[in-house]
Image 1: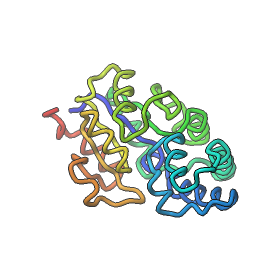
Image 2 (image 1 turned 45 degrees about the vertical axis):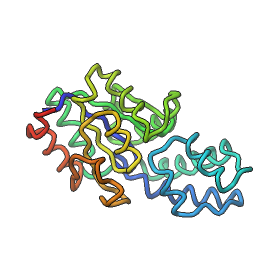
Image 3 (image 1 turned 90 degrees about the vertical axis):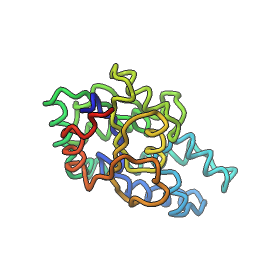
Image 4 (image 1 turned 135 degrees about the vertical axis):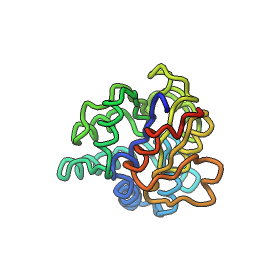
Length: 220
């Protein structure tokens, strides 16, 4: 059985990825930059700094600071009204792992302030003792550094960890780190781009929970 789990956030635990894509496009329009849905998809799973660098390929004079400030405000306004939407099985998988004594960490490309905001407005507030955020100075996914840091903070060898992700950038990061990778598809289904990056494709978080707690990872 695995010894620890490393969770992505948006699109995996929180059903916020679709909202985020729409907000990226909306903010671009408000600033006079035609951010497309494909551009928004390409930024899934990466930090704001990496996202700014990506957008500068199309809009060299875009202010990344202003763009992401408006993005955060838009997301916060929505969450304040609606609460943080959870993916099916989010509470259950975290509760079950804790009951089994399996430590876990949140490893997200989102900044810590926004992570805390999402958590405080959700049903899983206080359930993460270890959080790796996108503003910790680590290289953005698909670099393995965020997951390696998560394993380090948990005190577990990354080779004995399971990375749970929905984005290709996150899965590449997990694979490069040396972890066992489980994909729980959200907006992007499993396809050729994921070949070689995924050990198991779960239907949802409940399926992922069953998979990692039934000794199927005993060869790690």
